[in-house]
Amino acid sequence: MIPELRDILFLDIETVANTHEYESLDERIKTQWARKAIFFKKDREQTDEDIYHERAGIYAEFGKIICIAVGKFIEIEAGELGFKTKAYYGDNEATLLCEFKNMLEKMDATSLKLCAHNGREFDYPYLCRRLLVNGIALPPALNFMGKKAWEVQHLDTLDMWKFGDYKHYTSLELLASIFNISSSKEGIDGSQVNAVYYKEKNLTKIKDYCVRDVVVLAQLFLKLKSINISKLIVRNSD
Image (cartoon, rainbow, N blue to C red; front, side, top):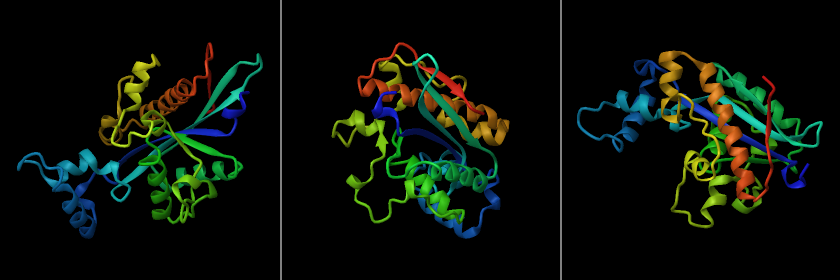
């Protein structure tokens, strides 16, 4: 095992609007959403409800997590590099967050490094916020309170690609394309997750997509670190 890869846990999350029934939202939440939605309206025909279904899942205050996929490099029998994945998913956000937290707490928080694409701006803060909303104390690996940015060791492949150009955003799919990594977008992409969850009711499809994203993320990390391997053997544990 390459020492640099030993303590990295790669992750990706999938999120949706907190409810499919906009009218069931608390009136205070509706008021707050209306204040945010006004910035997204493209024309007068769009309603707050329309925008809620399109964009609420992006915000931890109005969305929820339905899947967390993780992956870790392992050394397999033949001495080749393997990648083991696991997904925590379900309709009950508190349950899957507790399962994810329990997994994190079994790992050494002093050496553990999380890695996500745009993780600093999205995955890490979203996870922290939803943990607290569900009344779950932050695990040591996600407790950033009071820490300076340079004191947090977690990794972000978007930051790695920016090279200090902080006005620049590049999607995981675009980077996968230019590095010739197989796409994770097989019949679904991030913009369709809310509809697949609430209309198709196909959580398994979302879980599989989330796991594929983690595999792409790990392969991108190898490319960005100029670590060349002939083949990555993926093993799913769920």
